[in-house]
Length: 132
Image (cartoon, rainbow, N blue to C red; front, top):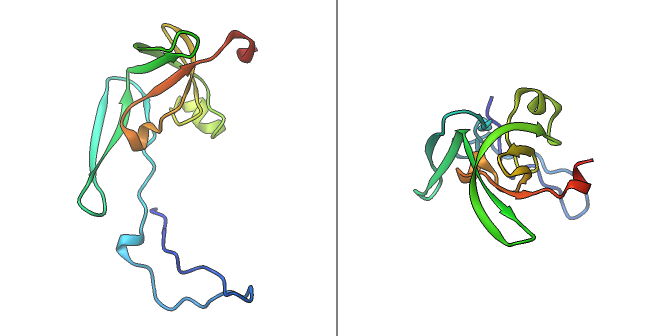
C-alpha cells in the first residue's frame, strides 16, 4: 500500500491541528520500497516528478568499496549481508539498505548509499575494532 506524502497535516501557529481541506492526490502517493537483495544485478528505472529518472537497484552482486586509510576505491564482489540495523527482518532476509554491514572480498563494509534510490551500492571498509 503506497504511503501518502502530502503536507496537509501541519499545525496552526497556535498549536492546534488544521482540518483536512481536501482529499489525497495521486501525485502525493509514495511508492513501495525497493528492497535491494544480493543476486545478479537488476535495475529498474522510475519516472520522477519533473520528468527525471531514478534508478532503483532491485538486486546487486558488487559494491564500490572505499578504504578510508588509503583513500582508494575499488569494485568488490558482494558476498553476504552481515547486519542491517534498519530492520531485523531486513537482516534476516539479506536486504541491503543504507547503514547495512556487508561482507565483500575486501572485508566487511558499511553501506553509505541508498541502493533503492541511487541505483548503486557504495560502502566504506569497517575497521576491525568496530566489527567486534
